[in-house]
Length: 225
Ligand SMILES: [Zn+2]
Ligand SMILES: [Zn+2]
Image (cartoon, rainbow, N blue to C red):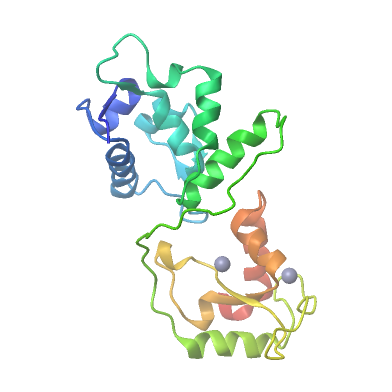
């Protein structure tokens, strides 16, 4: 991959040596982790320290915004006159329309495309390319998941409504959510897990009121305290 030159607030974080884009991203993440700037309650949010505030101009920002923020302060090495972020609107749009196998990058591009007018029906891809990716996962305890689901007795523990449907094995369909996410150091125990309907589960992960919803869940369930 072509190395890009970090400058301005980005260079203050990762240095001004030209690096491939992936390396730039992983160094910014290393900085965020090292300085514990990922929000403890909502892991999608990054809390700015002085350097990140220079980069983002916000006290807190969504991790999905990170690529866009980084792009502002990267330019091509041989091209000192024009920052990479100064590409024309058409070029930016074309870049956002490129297919990607990275789910975070996909969501980011979707968000940016939605902010523009969508004029034409996209052709899509009849045969999407399949790629190998590496993921890591936590080893989880089936007994904990089974207990939480059985204990919920077919009702969502947040909205208290019955599961929206029965699965192919005849069980009421609920999902088990870790209140403090495993990625944030949460435990895989019944005191950190709740059975939720898919809507409430997505809400806890993605809604703008997810912190309030999590607080309601904690209030409701004794065992989470
Ligand atoms: Zn629910
Ligand atoms: Zn969850």
